[in-house]
Image 1 (cartoon, rainbow, N blue to C red):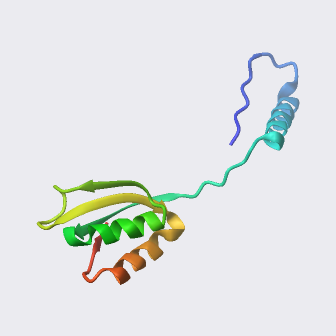
Image 2 (tube, helix red, strand yellow; image 1 turned 90 degrees about the vertical axis):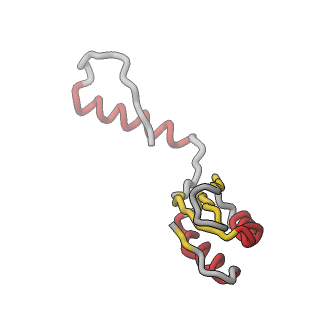
Length: 109
């Protein structure tokens, strides 16, 4: 995304030339600018029994999820709520991996 800021308020270029000038300026900036691929992150949560926390954390870290938080007050008795952000294209595979490695059914949010 690029933003071109106009400091002069006159109309000497006319509307057509002004649009072309903005386009050339933006194109020149983008030509030399570094680029970065950004993946969408999906917020997720899972209610985890205490005895499975280590296993769940291992799976989360292996898929490089971000913003892992744990809340002991949100889950039901004997569980904790773990929230995190995962790449959009990895959300389903993360669910499957956690379900396959855990002996209990996990509740995802």
